[in-house]
Image 1 (cartoon, rainbow, N blue to C red):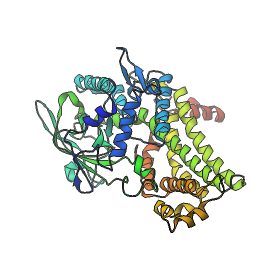
Image 2: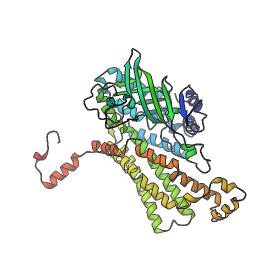
Image 3: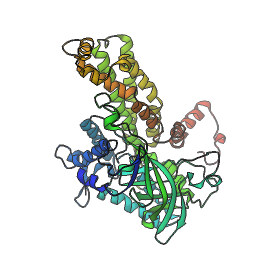
Image 4: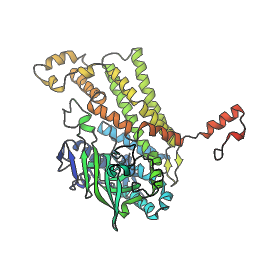
Amino acid sequence: MIRTGEQYRESIRDGRQVWIDGERVADVTRHPMFRPLVDIRARIYDMQHEAPFREIMTFVDGDGERCAIGSKLPLEAADWEAKRRAVDTLFDEIGGIVTRVGDETVGEMWSLYDGREVLDEVNPDFSENIRRHIHEVITGDPFHVSANTDPKGDRSKRPQDQDPDMLLHVVKETDAGIVVRGAKYETAAAYANQAFCKPTIANWGDAELSDYAVGFIVEMNRPGIKHICRTGFAGRRPIEDYPLANRFDEVDTLVVFDDVLIPWENVLFYRHTRAAQWIRATLHRYSAFPFVQRTLRLADLLIGTALWNVRQTGLERQQAVQEKLATLACWREGIDAHLTAAIAKGERSPAGLLMPNQAILYAGRVFAISQLHQMMHLARELCGGQVCVTPDHACFRDPETGPWLEKYYTIDDRWVAEDRRRLLALARDLLNSDYAGHRLTFQLFAQSPPFAHLAAVYRNFDWEGPLRFAQKAAGLSDRVWGEGER
């Protein structure tokens, strides 16, 4: 059943081992760098119960129970529209954008669900495990994240030729399960309930029975798990000066697996490189959709921030300004078009789910992410130089300096100094701050690096149509087709 926000908070007060800034954290729900996102995740749980949001955030399953819409298996286009509407409703409610809150990671389990025949090759119990865990996510409503990236070490060497723990691997089998060692990076792990761990991008070669080819579900408080987090942005500077960093920073974690026992019922595949290759090739067939949707909403925030800045200084009617705004709008509408078309031209998966059209979705991801840095710079141009020179909130409140800032930052009765300060603070945090740089890098690499984005397009694009068109235009004989190409 759907949980409440307080039930979620209580579920992560479980003695987990968490460190940040070199200190052990006693309670992640109260720590100033974790609390903002814990509160947002709790807000999602509470919205599922509230009358204005319940029908948007939940669905009723076959047993008559209400479940989170983000975890619902997508069987038709309407399911994707409902998921999209729920995410937009959340962002409108909290006034910002968050990425790792569950709906963007649970889809990676559906990809393995599509590969049940692959799992059956090594052990039918594994395909039953993934089916059961997907059901438990729907009915149990945990905060579920995904662990992909290892430290990797020297990438020119095989893991066996260096410290083997650079990639997570199995060190022992027992009657109770497998024992794993290594580490994974994962955003939000320190305040999540569980994670789907799977192999990173690798050249498996002929390592048919590799101990590194392992995937499993793990609770974030298992004995032997240590969460070593990067320092957060929340609490460093006043929220009045950094409204995004203090509310929406999602803390990233190096999750160390120090000989962690994974029960057999939680093992999804093991010593099966074909399953590892399958999940890496299909990992984002569903989760790319909510990821790209986040970039769409980031485009809205960039456009709104830039437009308010040019409007309050009276520059909106200048042709050069309108051209820059139109460029931002074209990028935004292009992302929206890819998302809409991916649903409208959805495809059936091997397990009978409705996948967003893979070629369109992956092309949309490339379109969104490859231009993000340029669009941020365009928004920076539109916001102007005052973003980087405006004094902080304390100076506006100081009795000696405040009157001067009130004089020079007030334009007219509509645009008074305080509103201009708030707008410039938002623009600075969105475009220029440490948090802004972090988010740009995160968006670039969160679902694999750019070369992998293009590789996904290459694997999923229908090349035969253009080939046949060109064949007919040139009058080529059928001899040009190689065996298996037609």
